[in-house]
Amino acid sequence: MVKISRPTPKDAYLRQRLFKQLDRMRSFAVTWVSAPAGSGKTTLVSSYIEHRKIPCLWYQLDQGDGDLATFFYYLGQAAKKAAPRKRKPLPMLTPEYLQGLHIFALRYFEELCARVKPP
Image 1 (cartoon, one colour):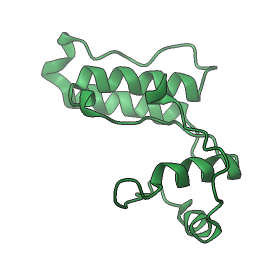
Image 2 (tube, rainbow, N blue to C red):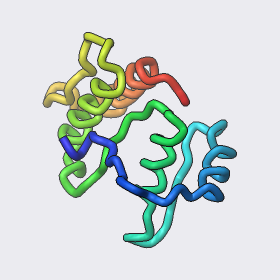
Image 3 (spheres, rainbow, N blue to C red):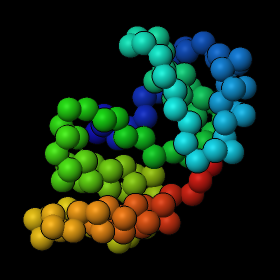
């Protein structure tokens, strides 16, 4: 499934200067890569992850992710792919959780973070 599969760039130029910048950012929980469309952000990050052999959870957002149930479903699928040994699936966002969405999200992300090791 493309949405949760990291692209594997073929013959991508290894951008060592940018790789070094990303290396310096690895101690942070999140790194934001921003640039205009078509400038190579996805290729940079994917080739960096591949070259450095970093395990990752890959999830490509799109318009359909505006629906929270869809978002949590595919994020759960990405987590399953990133940590296949975890047998218990992440919870699904079903109508009974909508009244307490903030509690559902908190518990969901606690469970997700417990499954996926930081790099």
